[in-house]
Amino acid sequence: MGKLGRFACIFTPMALTLASLICLGLVFSGQLNKNMALQRDLYFFKADTSEFQANPDQIIDEVKKLPLNENLDNELLKALQDPKKASELKDFYTVGLWNYCEGTIKDGVETVDFCSERKANFWFNPLDVWKLGDAQTGALYPEKMQKGLDAYKKAVKWMVAAYVIALCLTAAEIVVGILAIFSRWGSLVTTVVSTAQTIFIMGAAVSSTAIYTTLQGVFHTVLDPYKIKPSQSTKMLSVVWLAVAFSIASGFFWLASACCCSGRAAAQKKVSVEKTPYTYERVASPYLGHRDAQQGHQLGSMAPSKGHGTSGHAFEPFRHTAV
Image 1 (cartoon, rainbow, N blue to C red):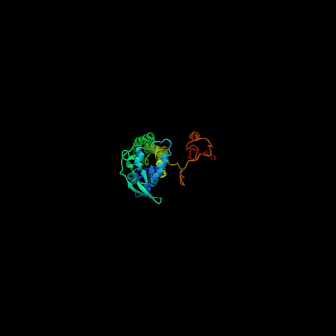
Image 2 (cartoon, rainbow, N blue to C red):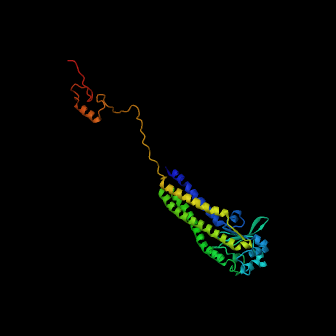
Image 3 (spheres, rainbow, N blue to C red):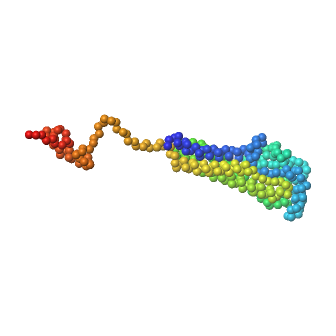
């Protein structure tokens, strides 16, 4: 197999690595541009506050139904009942890797009005985003809300770092993969890089899924009486786990290309060349039968030499002449 065959052998893992890189790029681009539909639909977490804004009285009724909430005089409820702050509350909030976006819903159509600035280790703090000031969640499920937000804030740092490292390793995997065209050693080095990339991208996918699933549970438990509906984007989850699938598959094919597809030309097969006509080829003497060449040579040396009744050929039989 030559260099062309070697290139064909690594085409599959290279294509899978590129697909994983594209998926990671989509994850990073989520919520960065409010004018692009694809980026608007890619978010980790969404808080739908449209019903709260439309029916504040119904929220209070729902709060009164809670058996554990005997005291309605708490800071969070007061902040959400404040007409000024209620008017500032948007219909929905979507959370990406670097920032959040907010917008309104009219006739079932969502329109993004604003996206915040990008920040490293961004985390969605509802008290700040909803402009609730110093309001605390103390009286209503204080432990669940506070612990949930604290855990979310700490875990986000690891999640973002894992995504960044995975993106860098994916790009490095493509660059190093070019060396794999020339030898299996290049494939082996690329396999090592691919393994590290798979570890980090899987860690990022697992952490982001767990983090925002937990956050969704916290919002549902604490804020459900206020008709604030949390959810996750199936599109974002699909892109994230597709990146993981492409990464695992590329690592398998990189390993296969390290074990096979050497790129060396196949050994030439031995081909017997037909002799051209009218060429000399020694044949066995009919007088030797099937004895080997060595026996034939010994018999030939015992035959009378020229001048002793022979015709001049060492292996030719005696010719008798009449006296």
